[in-house]
Length: 284
Image (cartoon, rainbow, N blue to C red; front, side, top):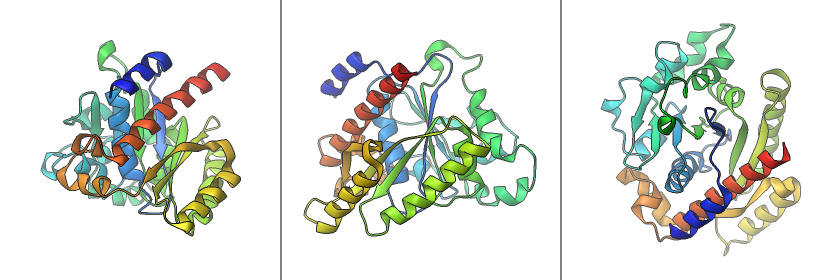
């Protein structure tokens, strides 16, 4: 990780003190690599000195499992936070990766929409919880990045993530219906921006499961780049067997096999995310 460490010194991507940068990983299609990207981007950011919290908002809890958090150890979860029974810090557990923590989820989340019903602040539960995250903590215990792993649907959980986020990071699988799903997601982002969170932006689109030998993959890449232009990250995440194997060991691929093509891609993506952060900051 020395190359990326050098790059980090140059880019200095630390978020502003006291306020973490909040990125929601969202796409209503399942199986596009949201959770894999949350785990591995979080690990790569932690490896270059950021203090990262992953918030698992998917009732399936795959991000929690993929980071080795046993279901029996999820006594306080993101569900407890969203129904207002616990502060977010209480749901946080440490992972085997230094500087990377996770607020784990449980299946209870799937009933959240019914439970909150028409509660007035239901779309802002997560935003308010993250707002208190860095209060009254030591400087070296505050988070610089919060990555929210959204469920594969545009429900109240995803709306909470978008209402809380500074920006959306969209994992997009290189397959036939990719653009169709993307337009729907962009419409939702637009709705959230006009009603709940005027500062929400698209941080970038990351193309996942890319196979250079596959003509369809190459065509999708060309189409998405033409449609979304500079919003698409240069880094593409390849189809890689080590990425698929890592979660069954409860490890990010960067811990499971640092030298594989998948790990290298996620390290590159982390530098690109930080580079964009720097550009966004200087633009303001």
